Image (tube, chains in turn cyan, red):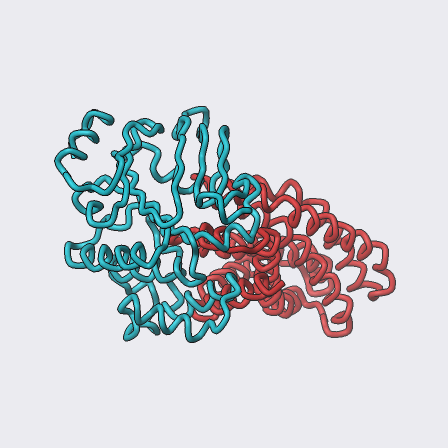
Length: 240
Length: 221
């Protein structure tokens, strides 16, 4: 049965661009309810790996099964179980937050879309700005809207690409609180970052991606940030 | 189908709000028509012969701009990725973008045709039913190819150059067919252009089916 299968099971997952290997054979299994933090420096392949998991980029080699379904086929029913937060908000700058969420609710076939949109705007702290064009949003507001967009259809697996980047400390803390709440509600989360301290309250497990491969995997939550930083440095040759 | 309609409505909402595509295309169309009319400076009895090629050259040049603008909407904030994460067939995305392009270019045609009549001394009114048919067929065929290639071009670094390079060689047969059919309709009426319109309709079917089938491979990395 598909639901008995883990949300993510990747074996030898690889992707090259113009002959350059960006992800070079990743083995990864993520169980339901986990919050896996993928650490790695710029250029480690984090974004490409996440876009493969989001079914936006086809692997050039390896196997990817999401909830037991072959990811290479990217069937619509499988995409409905995924929520993806990218570097960008994936929202149209000339539409308001409400219009963006209503549009995506139609694409995802969300029942009771108007109520769901209103509830998510409130959850994201955007209820007072729902009619403003997204172009006028701060980075923090856009990031909260991106998260609301990804949660519209209540996905089973949430994929987030460097969600804290370019956020001020207060906005980053607020985002962490929301992600921890989602994790505690049982949502499976995979998140990329290079900020170990920021990831620590969220992660149920951490791994380090270096030169397109998993260079280190922890065996539980990040209890000792310094130890994870040391593992990160050893795996990547970079300080964090 | 609901996804295609949602995308069509979203594109038209954005266009209505910003009017960037329509206003740019409209200004370019008027400039081109003025240049064509002034450059040739034909006497009123000879000028109508120029109407079909001027009409379609203006349509293609301005249409390139309009279609490109339609896909730049999806590039900003990586919105195309947002569409591709949705549980819809990528062919529905193609259908929605194609329909939006047909509507925007149709609006442009509604402005350009009377201006061609004005500048080149052609009474368009008697030929209007036939003109509507040939304009629609030309619009659908052009938009079908342009929508597909705009999706390719928008992901490349030289996107402004890439779309005309990819599109124009393939659209030439459609363009020739449209010019010939328009000339026939203006001279002899709709009935006389049946063969030309059939060829245009065949192009439309081929281009729409090709776009429908190939779009999936174009938009996913």
